[in-house]
Length: 287
Image (tube, helix red, strand yellow):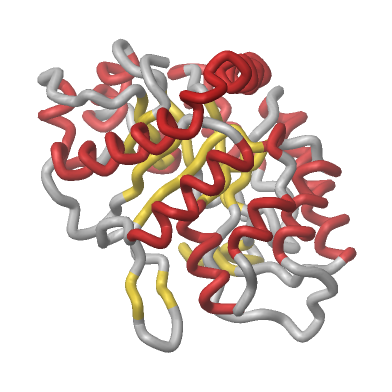
């Protein structure tokens, strides 16, 4: 990997990326966009993969659903993994449907012992089928359950450690949830085991006054940048992705945000470059 910096590979940027105009180190793709096609999207992905590492990021694993593991889905995902050999395979710590129906949303889970047991079992099944560890992302949420037995950071930590999987730490989602639910975002970061974190996400959100909405259609705001710097100080440098899924600007606009994140990492690791680079190398070797 040429650098920590990456962006989500989106259709409006295909031509620019294939023309060699991108200066980031890697790209992340939505897994489902490339699992059921032998056409142009997969051809584009394979061309990009010739020059860049790729991470696959799914939205349909449905790991928290009461439904059993979706074996046909995993078969397609495994075929994609074999075809492009991604740097990391990730999805979301959530649920998104039941009784075989996909509601195309990332829904929160009750943070209980019962949920932990259920989700851990399913993650282990998925990892056995895929033959590798996966990373799960902490999601943005807009409600809490009366049944909750623990804070989100404890819930997240318990699952990733007991399932022996990785964490894709979305810094914007931590900030959004801290506002929506009134907790200390920095405390969330402090409680996360650094050795489980293999990737960061950064994105913009919408401020609807009474709550923040994770829309991925705005530039990243200063408090999220500040939280990202704190996170890198606390956990260490990791590959990151700038996410933009709506109101997508020109490639150079998103890559400017990627450069800002890269500069934050350089600022953090410069005083102790040898130690941090060794830590980062260990993460890459374990993925």
